[in-house]
Amino acid sequence: MPNLNHRTSSPRSLLKKRQTKVRLRRHQMQFFSLKKRHYIEAVVESSAKPVVEATAELSNEATTATLDNQALCPDQLVG
Image 1 (tube, rainbow, N blue to C red):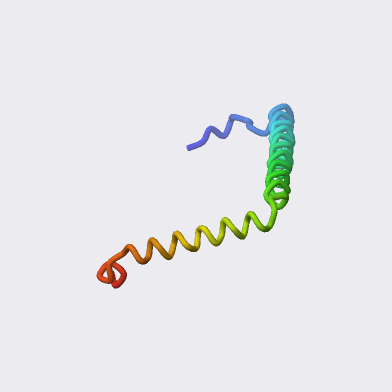
Image 2: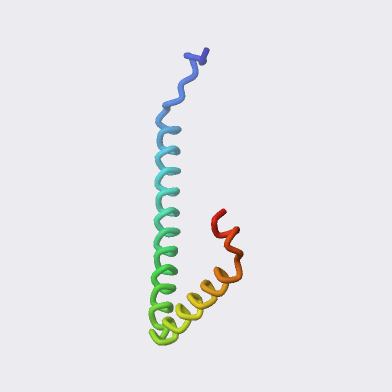
């Protein structure tokens, strides 16, 4: 049973609660803007890579994948 005599919504406590919310929201906005900036930088760096290099990487990955599949026995492929 809560104590009904205890007044939790005093003007002082409401003010403190509101200030805490504002401070947390401000901190959150700073964090997300920083995170977004890092993400944009990462995207720009990755898109600055030459397309030829990226396609070469993809073809290398495809050949290794086919070699891995050939290394498996037919029994393993059926599962």
